[in-house]
Length: 400
Image 1 (spheres, rainbow, N blue to C red):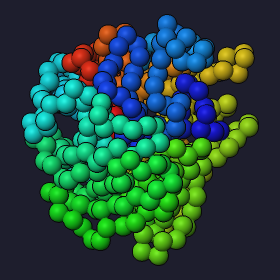
Image 2 (image 1 turned 180 degrees about the horizontal axis):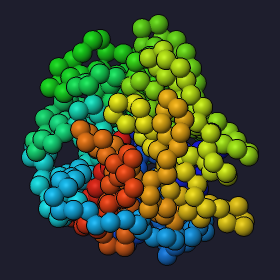
Image 3 (image 1 turned 135 degrees about the vertical axis):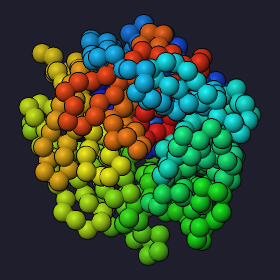
């Protein structure tokens, strides 16, 4: 499995992907999802394109898109499932009713905001727009960074940065900055950990050349190769000793306490999990011809949701994917009912804080389908909802 997997699922994109997107306007139009699931984060995840726009995608043919929706029972209005909206106007969206409530404290920006899930809430920083962009491999000036606590309706300014990454501890984030106009990835970035109130936590760190922080962990900083590098690479780095302890291919998911990745495979594939707290690692075999493309650890780290191959055509092209949940300790897989969906349809998923529920969303022609499942449940619950123009629901770890 490589970082060039096409459409039916994708390698885990780095969190810098959307921060470097040269977009003056962020939009969601007729089946074209721009700036959604942060690249596992490499180019194949950066956009999901409809067959009608394939000609504008380098002539690349799109795989089948059936089924076009997940299948389940209607989501009860009283379920209280709400998602953050990223894009032009960040807001809370109640999935069952379509009600929205804007986030106060964010200056209006025509090019919108990207959201990154951090412990206890979300970091928001605006997309680069006209006048601040100097090329795909050129660092723009730092932009204001805001924090939105889970369920809060108010954003708090933390400082300025080019990129943001979750810290290992709840209530903290890493702000990564580069000299404006510096050529990436030849330049060196600096990182400052701050609390969600904006107070500095510890010294400013000088990052290895060619890398940016993807996630803080219990065993150091997970770094990913910076924009402009030929291939996406991950490494676990100790900022105190400045030594690299591990390198990883094709990450699937990461939390403060664990890293999951998919080794290259030709027949039977698997997902490997490294326990960063010193516990036993785990190899999770996947059934049949399945491959894993993306994942999300539950809040307690006991479960790992995965997007895997559901159907492969005669030509070997992936035709559909589905969600499964792995028990990390035992490796047992449970298929999430009703989540089979056509390859080429972007599915964003993650665990809802405080409820233990797995939430997923997928783009429809002019709306969004939101699906909810509780581990052990026999049914998937779904709702179709709309978001304001230029916005999209956020279910997974981001960025969006």
